[in-house]
Image 1 (tube, rainbow, N blue to C red):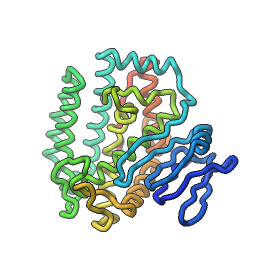
Image 2 (tube, rainbow, N blue to C red):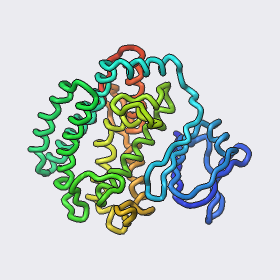
Image 3 (cartoon, rainbow, N blue to C red):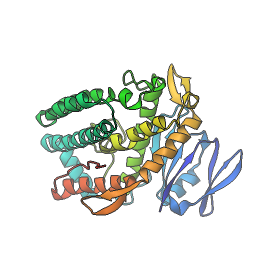
Length: 330
């Protein structure tokens, strides 16, 4: 099974014959090139053209994050599975406002259904979130009524605002109070965790898109504009509640994270290197978690589930097989 490599130290990534290695203060570490899907770089790492050519040949994506943990960009090798037909069908669904809106609504529906699953899970464990669940149920009716992408996204935003109000009830720790959603920069620890987790998920989905015939530049809920990639943002919406948010709740409620894992930067708060490592370890464990898929009657991991979701989207676009987003069942 192929895996992801995470690099936090400073150094150089180099090619030697048919292998790759990382050279830092602790010496050389050779990388199993045939078993790598993605390399995630958080440290100050130098690379050269020879290395990138070899990474491209081996179909390895390289994701770059800056010192603050913000996603910078991805080295996306030449598409090896790309299809002109699929790209044209994607563009057709984007340019046709009715088709685009229909698909965008599916992403929001999937996100909201998975939000409700998470809230019911914690309600059954004593969290007082019944009012928020009912509020979200009522707001959910606005999804089908939305006449355009803007009103659809506004409806989703309202639902997430209600959902985020539940975080303090689920976590119940003053050290990790939510207050309100804040991004660049996150203004408290919980927002720092959400931003970092979402960035990881965006890049994980991008890595899975590379293994399909889909073009990541053509999204539907998120407009295809000056952004390099948008389809990964769409698909990630479905999985944020069951992957990112569950990772956050687990890390905090199990006391894995503390104030020592954060630092003040850029007038806000970010995870320090130790905190990022803890998050990534729990995140990877979640991606590799295997559960019984009811429709397939087979065991799949969350990582595999993302790939299956992409195949369903491709069938919707190319074969008119209506896409139904995955809703997790616990």
